[in-house]
Image (cartoon, rainbow, N blue to C red; front, side, top):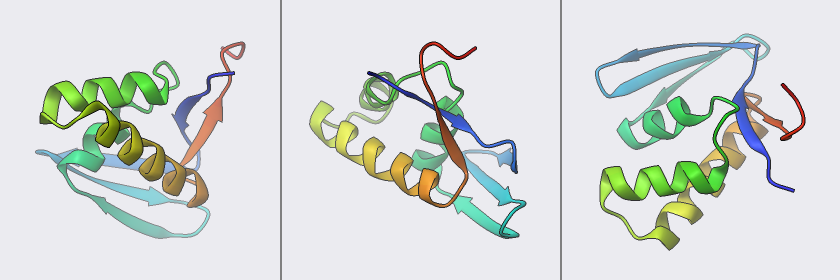
Length: 93
C-alpha cells in the first residue's frame, strides 16, 4: 500500500528563497535544507506519494527517474527517522 509523507505536527518551518529551516520541537534541533531538500520537503504534504514527489523532482532538476526515486526514498526516510515527517495512509484524511 502506498503511503504519503506528511510533516509532523511537532515541527515548524520557514522557507527563505530556495532553502528551508525546520525545527523539531521534540528534540529542539534545527535542520537546514538545501534547495533539493526544500523541494522535497514542500511536497511532503500528505497528498503526494514518494513516487509522485520523485516524478516532480525529475521534472524540476533534470535527474533520472531512478536517481530521483532513490534520493527521495532515502531523504524522506531520514526525515521520518528524525521525527520531522510521518506517514499518512490513503484512507486517512
